[in-house]
Image (tube, rainbow, N blue to C red; front, side, top):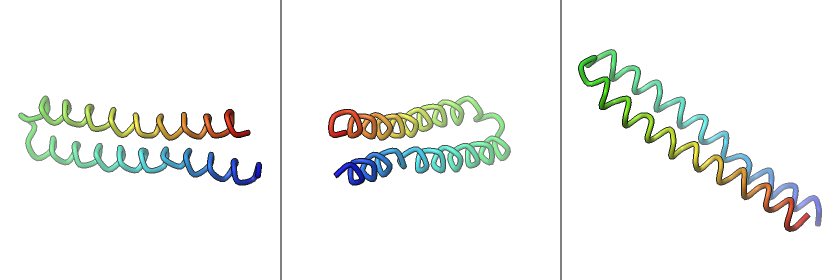
Length: 74
């Protein structure tokens, strides 16, 4: 039973990988967009920060779920 709890917590914590990849891709596209159209830097940066915050929030939710699995079921 404890091994299943550990596997569940590890799967929940894997959301950090997806968030990291997503933030990296979004940042690279934002830098490309700014390089092509420098006058739109303000709008691009605002959208980038909002998207990064939402992606990071999903990673934090996954981490919290992993901790809850360990604490409550473990």
